Image 1: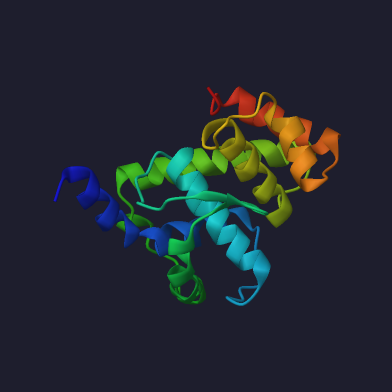
Image 2: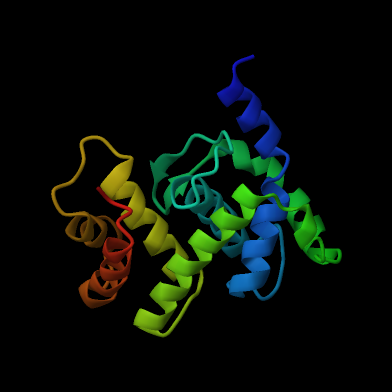
Length: 174
């Protein structure tokens, strides 16, 4: 087994803890229900952002679906994440340096977006992850990720532009 594969396998076991911290720290999901679409969207987008913005190799492959980045492999994690969230989440010492840095990078981006548009909810999280996927991980790459997202999702241009400004400042899309 090569080292990258080992890291991905090892890190997959940490997904529930990492996502639980992001949900708790950002407050995006107030009520945890593994059956709710909002919970599932948040899990999908948080894991995508942990991999792309946080730089963690969690081993999940994402594709574009109607709500942006989606990984079929995460379906088995909803219940595990819910369980971690409903138990006490006082295990910061369990996170290694790379995991802590990844969480901080994702939170810095999301709180930057919140400062820009005065809200942080599941829809905002979906827009952030979708814009990043459009500018990095789809082929062919659209000339203008903002216009492409507006066209695909029928969103308000002003909101998407303001979110894009934050993403652009972070240098995520090269």
